Amino acid sequence: MLTNIENSKRSASDTWTGNRLLDAGKRDLAWLYRAHTEQLALCRELEEIADSLPASINRQKCIYAAKALGPLIKGIHHYEETVLFPQLQSSPDATDALGPTLERLKFEHCEDECFAEELTDALLKLGSGDQVNMEAVGYMLRGFFEGIRRHIAFEREHLLQGVTY
Image (tube, rainbow, N blue to C red; front, side, top):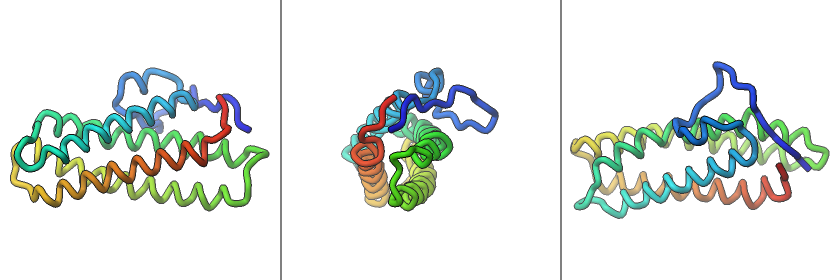
């Protein structure tokens, strides 16, 4: 069992989320749960944007979401891959199945970050009033936020079950 996972020393290579509340505190499991909460709140915003298409678009919400998306996703992934995953692997309770699971999650992180970049571009266009394929943007939004929700649920239900801080 893990206790008190933290990364209180920050270096130039640290990735920030762009969220003042998250970036101000030390990075530990409590931080990760707060970050997941922020990520789920962003998913709700993205769902509202998707539901508003094509006629009732809140352009300001699109621009806010676009600016928050990449840094939040990258900051959380950075913490998980550089702090959490190594701690989990070094735990005496780690099973043989953990390694492949963490590798799959790292691959999902890469996919999510690439998807977030494409979605950021679409949201900025939507927010600035540029012409976009509304059906495609709606599909992108739903695919992204549903994938993020599944990812967080898996981590909470399987990876972080029994982990204390």
